[in-house]
Image 1 (cartoon, rainbow, N blue to C red):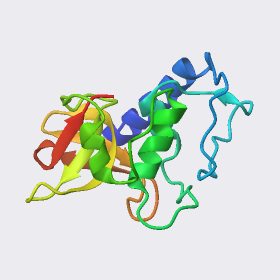
Image 2 (image 1 turned 135 degrees about the horizontal axis):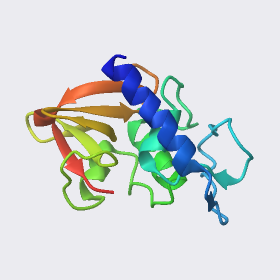
Image 3 (image 1 turned 30 degrees about the vertical axis):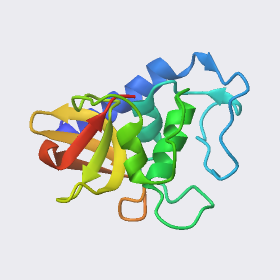
Image 4 (image 1 turned 180 degrees about the horizontal axis):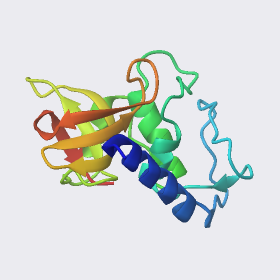
Length: 159
C-alpha cells in the first residue's frame, strides 16, 4: 500500500473512531459557510478533531460566500467544527498569533511564509514525515487539497 493510501486510510479510520461523540451544544458554522459534512445527522459535531475535520473536505471546492482567498476561512471553519475558536481574521497571517509555536505535529497549523516573513497561506498538518509534512488546506488549486511540504518553508502553530 502506498504511503498516500495508507495515510488516507488512517485519516478515515480516525474520523470514524473520533467522530461520534460530541454534541454541537449550540455551536453552528457562521453563515458564510455553505459546506456541511454529508455524513451523519445534521446538528452534530462529527469531528472534534481538527485533522479529521480538514481531511473530510479534501477535493471539495470553495465553501464560503466571501470573495477572495479562502485558505484562512477554511482553517477557521475546521477549527470551529473541532470545537476551537476561529482565527482572528481572514488573513493567513492571523494563524501566527493563534497559539504558541508548534513542532509540525498533526493538528498544528502550518503557515506558509515567504522570504520576507510574509504569511501567504495556511493549512492543517495531517501527518509528519521527517523533513516534510502533509498539509491539508483550502484554496490549494481552487480546492481543498493535500500537499507534502518541506518543514523549512513553514511556521507551525499549536491549536
